[in-house]
Amino acid sequence: MPTTGSTSNPLSEPRPAAAKERHWVLLLCGLAAAHVFVFSAAFPFFNVVDEAVHFDLVVRYSHAGVPRAFTHLSAEAVPFLTVFHTVEYYHSPDEFPGHQIPAPPWTLPPEVARKGMAERADQWSHGVINYECSQPPLYYAVAGWWWRCGKLLRLDGGALLYWLRFLNLLVMAAVVWLAYVAARMLFPENRFIRLAAPALVAFMPQTAFYSITNDVFSPLAFGAAFVLLLKLWASECTDRRLAAATGLALAAAFLAKICNLPLLAVAGVALALKTVQLARCGKLRPAAPALGMLVACAALPMAAWMAWCKIHFGDLTGSAQKVQIVGWTNKPFLAWFHHPIFTPHGFWIFVSQNLATLWQGEFLWHNQPLPRPGVGLVYAGLTLLFLLAALVALIRQPGRFSRLPWIVLWFNFACLAAFFLFAALLSVKYDFDDCLYPSRAHPFFTSGRLMLGALVPFLLLFAFGMDCLLKRLGEAAKFLLLTALLIFMLASEIATDWLIFPNAYNWFHLQ
Image 1 (tube, rainbow, N blue to C red):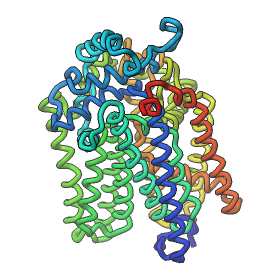
Image 2 (cartoon, helix red, strand yellow; image 1 turned 60 degrees about the horizontal axis):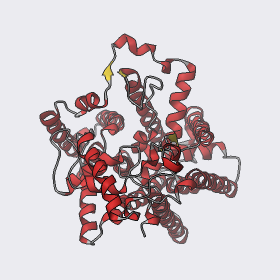
Image 3 (cartoon, helix red, strand yellow; image 1 turned 60 degrees about the vertical axis):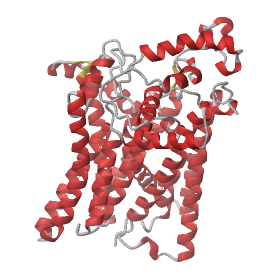
Image 4 (tube, helix red, strand yellow; image 1 turned 90 degrees about the vertical axis):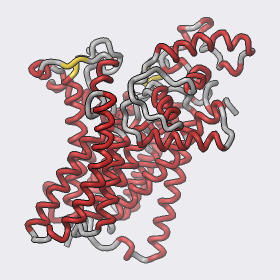
């Protein structure tokens, strides 16, 4: 009998045990929110991962102003950018008189502050084009509503800015719960995996979670789609409400961030294979209405946004003009194969840095990468080790699985492979000219945050691989090693970011 991923009902375990487990998960949700709060509050505005332009879009959407072109920053956003922006992400104290970063404007005499702010306001108003205007609208619409709620609460200035960031607390608490639900459905008899996956989400030191950015909605949207797909795969696909919800969740993943397209392609292939299976079993006819509902609910919102982009930005994704603004040019096809990614050293750089930034993010501080390279290598090494253990188990021991977990774990691997292929294509396709990142000197897309849509599938694989590697140990030993890993994650993050906490521009110094 299979011992991993049984299809038995996870709620069939004794009620006290099930209730205790849910209490642990609720605690993890609270810890995730606290984790995001502390580090979101520690980082000043506006970080190097496009936070300024994402904030500008949130302000626009708060007035139901969907952009129709790549334009300068809005008049409402500029005062916030002028007052609360610190130069420390790109500049070190040595570049300033007395080796001191300029003091926050609100700590200076009004007449002194006004002189500096006038010049900075002009730079923000006329020197910056918002190159993210063609991004899908879901995050900005929700964050715009949240911004308006903050105003109704009479928040202003820095408090209102951090209120916007603190939306991420709710998002990440929800992602923790989604990871638990998915793990419970796949591994109802394996308590270690059921708790390891949400715990890893709660303590993940990804700096995108501490930023105003549409990246944070990707794990929520595709995580919800993933859970609904699990329910759909386990059924005969006749439940129209479930199918409609699945379609809308897939559409939400697309409308959260265009980089989720590779994940949607994998989901589309999986649904096509499910349809073929139903046809072979003679069950396609009763499932056809639900499948049609799924396709309609997924395709119509996507098609509507692509039509908007085609009308207002000139192509279906709105990316062609953005590429021109940031200064990239298309390379001839044969020139793709001269890229260093096709060398062993270049391939290792591409894989290891994508895995490292998936875990840690990619903030700069004083124009240097904030994450420590050694810690990134630990994350990359552990990830490759546990994913290899999961892959070996899937290939060499298929008999230990029931059908659904076996299919879903391969689906999870396909999601990761799709992202890496997508990032590799972007890396070889463009000449990055004088762009800071990617650049001609480092022509790799190594932004693991773009893979955050696959966070729940990825961490399920990670936890499963960890369980496979430690299978000879008892459950207590597994949880002890998991606790050690979580302590390492938190301790290394605190050690990395400790220099940020005393910063005069952050939330702690606005109080």
